[in-house]
Image: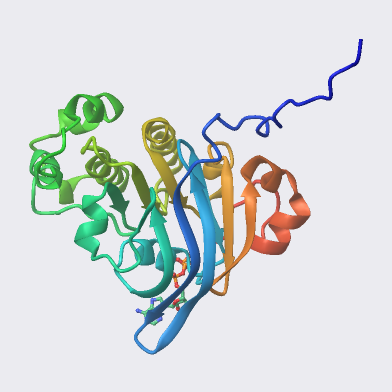
Length: 258
Ligand SMILES: Nc1ncnc2c1ncn2[C@@H]1O[C@H](COP(=O)(O)OP(=O)(O)OP(=O)(O)O)[C@@H](O)[C@H]1O
């Protein structure tokens, strides 16, 4: 009897789901400009479906500009493929309509409106609106639905901003910029738990300076420096490599890099 050669398909790296190879977003050679300034230089990376990708880098590396490029909020060139469609020439309205939710750094809540009104304004026509899910993840928003958003704490406003992005059931990609910024430690933990639960439902890209928040939830990392991608790969491997995190982010293991 002859032994058959081993034809096993190579298995995905441990911890990666079966669909890890399927990118929902792919950037290739993206340049971005703000006024006269050339901010991103040939940025390329992929975001696999069904997990959290952390977008990291020192201050001013270009993380926010990368998210804004995907959304068409800054002038950009290059290829931006969202689930098989090139959106590099699309308007922001069109990118959002294709199922991209955005939570900007400064939280996009309307301070003068109530929690309920903020959520109602986020409803996209044609989508289902996941109020049950939002209230399950953020019970405080249900309790405070009549309260003006501007009178809530920073953490509660952040939860409202996240809830607005999660509300529409046709969102397939969430772009979240510095969700823990400026929050007290107990609220950072609460927001991190919510974020992790959200990411089980929708593929998420998070910009986060607080590595303690992101290191346990991210599966993949992309590191930027001076508008260029300097590292892309498995998050657990990256965070285990103290020398690399130190070199690329200027932090010691587990630290925050502000
Ligand atoms: N409106 C603007 N006009 C000119 N340059 C800008 C503008 N906004 C950002 N930049 C520059 O673009 C570069 C990238 O900024 P960006 O905000 O994308 O970085 P970041 O990695 O998100 O930084 P941070 O961690 O500080 O938020 C920086 O050098 C910044 O000074």
